[in-house]
Length: 146
Image (cartoon, rainbow, N blue to C red):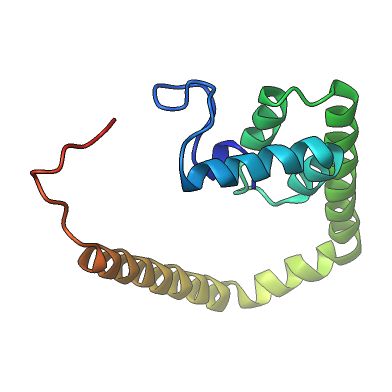
């Protein structure tokens, strides 16, 4: 959704601060345009995302695109207040119920989580193996640009 997530364009050996050519250029242009038009809203949405979401990349992209500082502060602060306020409300409201449920069903929940993790790992392994088989081999006579 943002510049660094869309395949480059940032500083580095391949990006160099320029837009990439080809299909990646359209995605980067879209991300730049989206962040410039809806900067605070985009940052608010990123601030609401749970932990695995690469929030730092979004904020760095906003800096790279010279997003106005008040817009960044407004979007990040509003998103974080909403997210952590909602988490605090849920913890106060349902905290005791969650603790008692986990204590009563902890072993079963642990077993189910372990099975889900193993099934997810196997599915990921099969997906990666099938994508390697489906990819056509590159010919050694074609020089690679880089």
